[in-house]
Image (cartoon, rainbow, N blue to C red):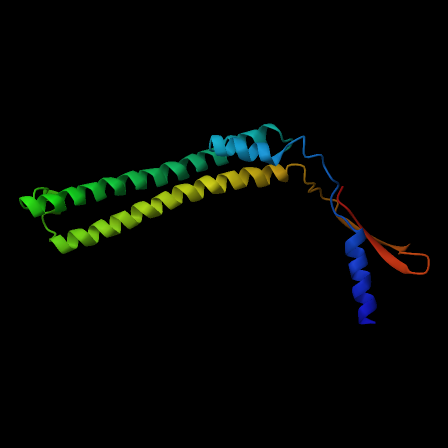
Length: 177
């Protein structure tokens, strides 16, 4: 009995489908990803232009710019501090403390601060890469699902069907319109 139920379920999965195939040449997800890789946010704008209805992605462009801009700001600030600490440490070895910003720290504390800001700089570089990769992935996924039907009429109908001459089965069909 269990084997029959499993076979019927496998048959329903094999015969059933939930979405009509849409020609991907209308809105290619590759083009949106390439545009977004060239200019951050361009893939989202491309998707907004080529969609109908309320699926606009214009609002994501300022978020992408803020993400890349914020992580770039952190990168530049941490790099400036790393250079300042390195210059101060080199000056201390030759002549003594010179920058009043680092006067309260000894040499060991400067090395520790250098490592801390260098680590934060490296994390900012990873953050820029993560925001950049995420916006490319977002543009590609959104372009892939632009024609996905999410209408209110979602129904499942099950019909008996003949799998072969002597085998009776079930057929499930999803109606998404």
